[in-house]
Length: 375
Image (cartoon, rainbow, N blue to C red; front, side, top):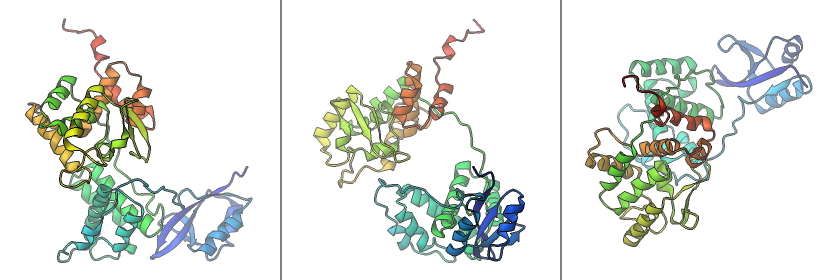
């Protein structure tokens, strides 16, 4: 087993793509590196580098074969395509009227988003975030922007009190250009991200859920709200449901290619099934379970949000209710009723019970056993 190793990293030095070689001090490795074509030292990145081309890359593997393990985890990109997202429509980005002195997203950026089959919502967020960034450096060539420039931009966002999720989206959009579009994986591997916030999910009581369902406007809206809660669906998953996904014999719902491109099954409530049958007779959907009344296209995400918000308002609930709160409530209520956390994990589609364990912090059944100190 080789005990020496070298890590390859993408570097951009004086607007040229280079291969960075990071390693612990070792005389054998140092001697072999001197035999590579024109090795140089970068003070900025604190590592040796050579020009990035196929010949040099092959030479590195040949030179260190049997001497040191070459770590390429930072060098090669192995992300899978999102195979089941909706058809991407970026035409409206191309047709926009150009504001004076406003720098638009490069065409190759849009093309790569299409090829990677990112969801429409992700495309919109990435384009908006990247355009905001490149207009901050309106007079700079994109290829010349380095890590320090990005840090200055992120400091600006922090001073403007942008949320952690907004800043993380900005970093992802910027990295997408340099790593995916320009083909330089992990170009900005040293950029620091904001610390992950630890927030507890907001949960409704069962009584509040029933009130919201009872204050929907029609059977279609009732089915939408009921499914979000009783099956623990994400809004995007609800909108993706097709008629064939409802299995009334096994009383389950098949959720195809959800978050992380994973399939799973979740529960189908008997009363919801009865409501769905009534809904089907009235609305007669053809492909998707919930379709636009004008066309056969699936229902919009904004419409689902409006239904939940309006129904909660009609029910007299003062706090703002979102579709995801219904999913949080589903998980919490199952946990409070004694359902095994591993079963809840499967229903929610979580990779690990560690993600699902967040609901143990909001479930109230454990609090009832604590003695009332004022009694």
